[in-house]
Image 1: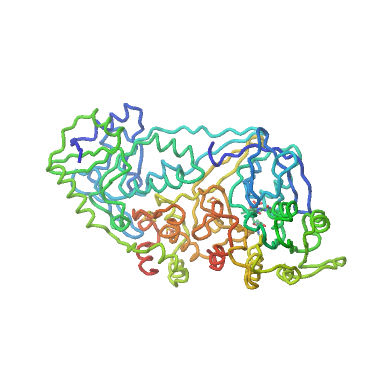
Image 2 (image 1 turned 90 degrees about the vertical axis):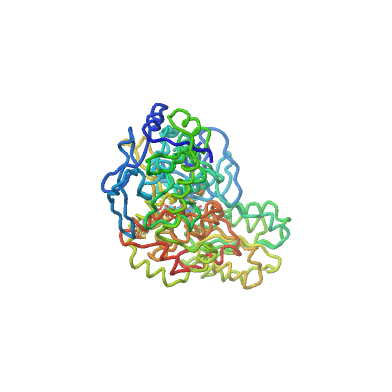
Length: 357
Length: 272
Ligand SMILES: Cc1cc2nc3c(=O)[nH]c(=O)nc-3n(C[C@H](O)[C@H](O)[C@H](O)COP(=O)(O)OP(=O)(O)OC[C@H]3O[C@@H](n4cnc5c(N)ncnc54)[C@H](O)[C@@H]3O)c2cc1C
Ligand code: SF4
Ligand code: SF4
Ligand code: FES
């Protein structure tokens, strides 16, 4: 492992900002860890932890100096890779103006291994097919990813089952492991850009002790998953489970509130909104996040193909764990646990899978 | 260009087919119109109102697309109300095509329900133009009432000039109607084809396609040789909005034209 050690993230944040990056990192707001622009390391949620269970999220006090002592937060990189609202174009009589595809230079600090896996899923969706999205490509290329290896997985995490974590192995520019006694960060580089940034901050080479301490963090984290899923043959097993009585059971608890899809880092479904100015001369199209939990999502000929809640829950869950493989050659779930934590009625995909399969 | 950006197209001509249906010829404001395969669709944008998938029903003499649209809601209504010279947005063509080469040398059954005749029109024109490449050619059409039949003039020409066996049935006859009454599947009895050497193109409401395909297969046509065009809600047409999912398929990319062999199991699952 080619790694270095630094005592503080201050020079890293300052260095990124001086290179024109907007640094976006975890902060605490509204009782949760939320991504926001930060200008110094003091804005990171030092000493804060979280407690996550189905339908339950609480910030806690950790009584230590860890700044990344919490698990996945409701925000994910999706907010930046695929913004919730995007203007597509304006049409005025015979002319079409594409929205200025400015790609902000964002350094996203604190991305977890599951979220890197989710970005890889989105790359497949938006760049891997017959109709690649140049605006997405620009945003991705302008984005610097600074991962954090999880030390304290949440009660709803199951990245080990999904093979996506807890240690970041690919897709990052830099990856941090936060170590204590003494408090320090081990930094691994994952790209030329990352390596170049490391040269500008004060650091020392990692010792064997630093490296084994970091390995121990990831090893222990892997044993502390809040949840697990048996993924063996899951694609086929789920495809054959259309008639399970469990769909109706879970639908009786599901509010179709769409929370699970909004917090999911891989859910990519969108719809389009149209508007025009007062004279009707300029028409604008906007793409916004959508959810397969809404009734009008699958409307054909005046009625919804998936009129029942059980069909909509089945669509969502089979898409994540089965038909995503057919469409994109990979799983649509990365095991971040957000949909479990943020479901108001505490519906737990891992539990549902256990009952259905 | 972004896959969601429309190109401006001019409405070159507008022909009302019936009270609620018009056929538009659309041509790019600038540059050539991308080629299409029979069965493919475009996403047509009514500025400020919305965008819908519409099958291409032919190539216009002026070089653009011919598309037949029925006003059933806000967007289709706005498109049907456009006038010659108006500008709309068009993206595409998208989706899979009717495989005409697979039908070569075989008897061909074309079955249309209602507006399903529009996406089949390029198929029938090809069959009419190159009849010798195929065996017996039959076109069966079901429509609600005699007044809702689209392309009546062309149907007559296909029958009288091109030697296609054209049969039409209606659900609700009027006083003048002398032809068959009832479902399009009943016309299968009235046409001549050798099931083991037959290729079929079927388009219409899902229930009509299921019944027709099942009946053809029951008579011995291979399910792999029965093609249908599946309709699902579509917002993007390019595999990024998720609306058109049919189990493992994204209908906009893997369809709309599918073999009954592939579609049968999917269409049999309720609320898939
Ligand atoms: C691949 C493909 C090809 C197609 N090809 C064609 C084609 O060639 N020609 C064509 O005309 N169409 C075609 N369609 C269908 C066409 O896309 C739809 O008719 C269109 O999307 C309807 O959109 P809309 O906005 O006009 O109607 P919407 O307002 O979205 O209405 C959609 C449906 O809801 C019904 N509806 C709306 N409001 C109500 C209400 N209050 N109560 C009850 N029902 C209501 C309408 O009757 C309509 O059936 C195709 C679709 C696909 C997927
Ligand atoms: S389905 Fe749930 S656990 Fe899986 S990636 Fe989405 S939010 Fe995370
Ligand atoms: S968050 Fe829970 S209640 Fe809301 S749609 Fe998802 S499963 Fe249903
Ligand atoms: S129409 Fe958007 S994914 Fe198919």
